[in-house]
Image (cartoon, rainbow, N blue to C red):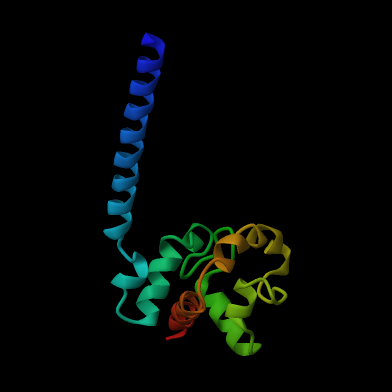
Length: 133
């Protein structure tokens, strides 16, 4: 009989803790910020924030010099000259036109860019083209 009472008490206690955890998760979700998209005021600014932040693009691409990948200016110039589609490339739906020899390195980032919205990809494209100014 004592074992039954003990087991009931343990189960009741575990049930209470679960509700508390669920409440905490619900409250966190309710106060969730919209993130980088909410902070940006225009597509170029959003593109810069993604490029330098969650997109992790800046780890390989710098404005004026080749690091691992081509510079942002080089990407913008070649895509403009060849009438390329940066968004289509970032979705993984077109061949590389800037530096095909580095494609295997870039391809590892496609899961990140493919998870982005069309607006986020367009913003990155706008940011890249802003380096032609």
